[in-house]
Amino acid sequence: MIERLDLSDPAIAAQVLAIQRAAYAQEAELVGYDAIPPLHETLDELRSQPLEWLAAIVDECYGGSLTRTYVTQAYVVERR
Image 1: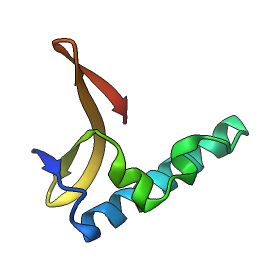
Image 2: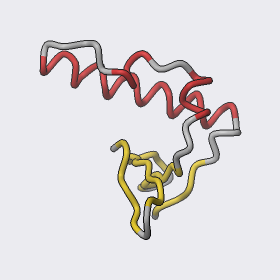
Image 3: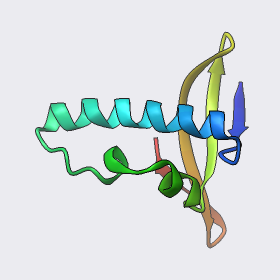
């Protein structure tokens, strides 16, 4: 099931940030480059982005997420 995430909820925002950092840390290790902006994003920075957060929920567990924005009659995937 796909659900919208409400990053105004401190617990949800903290969980999204932790997962984001873990995912981008793996990517940084794979490419040998750790200056990936989302890897160093703060909770306030994460929550201030004008993005719609969506998550895949599998067996009541978080299975992944993406963000999107609506631009000129189309959605743009920002993060995944």
